[in-house]
Length: 163
Image (cartoon, rainbow, N blue to C red):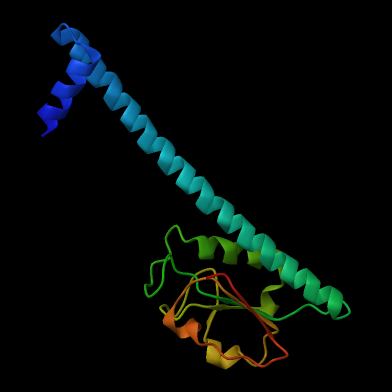
């Protein structure tokens, strides 16, 4: 199949000798490889932008809450730290990056980190959502764990779902 494709390209481009044909193949492979790396770069940039966008939205929610409540700082829950749902792998997790930025932005004693697939973490004190749901003012859902799909909160509380 591959030879048929290259033979047709050879006929279309009228290759007269093997050197021209091989030169074309090398440039074609370089082009395809470059496009592959470029597409991966673009995908990575889109993912990075989404992470920054989520963090900005979280900051906006917190500031809006403070403005509406006489500068009272809200207690918040950051729900989900994993790379993807239903796993305990946090490596290269966008949610983990967001959680670290929140930790820099918002007081740690008013921030609860929830990850149902791990019991502890070196950077965060891990809480259980059912234990803190009544005391937090805003809950941010970052990862689509089953535990977060049917969260019910008091009507006076705010739930921001990034899924």
